[in-house]
Length: 78
Image (cartoon, rainbow, N blue to C red; front, side, top):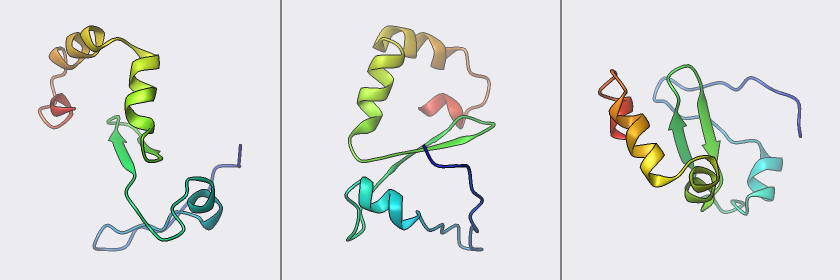
């Protein structure tokens, strides 16, 4: 696992994913990633990892119950 690093976000919201990560995730020609806003942190996931991560973390029913408890309308749409 690499050490944490800071990256510049442009005024239009763009951020570069480091080359080593793009290569490891098979994004050398570009592509899509999943962004999960946790409210206090943001998680970037490689293509296809979102469903696997969520299913390993909690069941669909547990996820629905968690989302129902959220007070933030932006987060409650996850």
